[in-house]
Image (cartoon, rainbow, N blue to C red; front, side, top):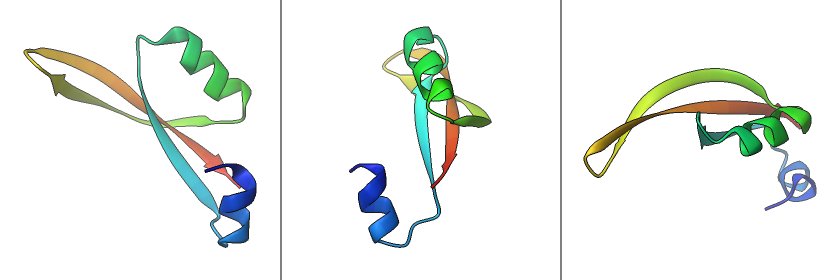
Length: 58
């Protein structure tokens, strides 16, 4: 779904989660206007990872 679809559905914001160590994606989301609003730990298989949430105002 793109930003226009969100606007057409009267959405005001969205949150996107990404692994914290994924630097290329983190830079991209920040460049696109995302603000980091939360971090949490998740478990994938036997490993724990940190992820962050980027919030976008539409």
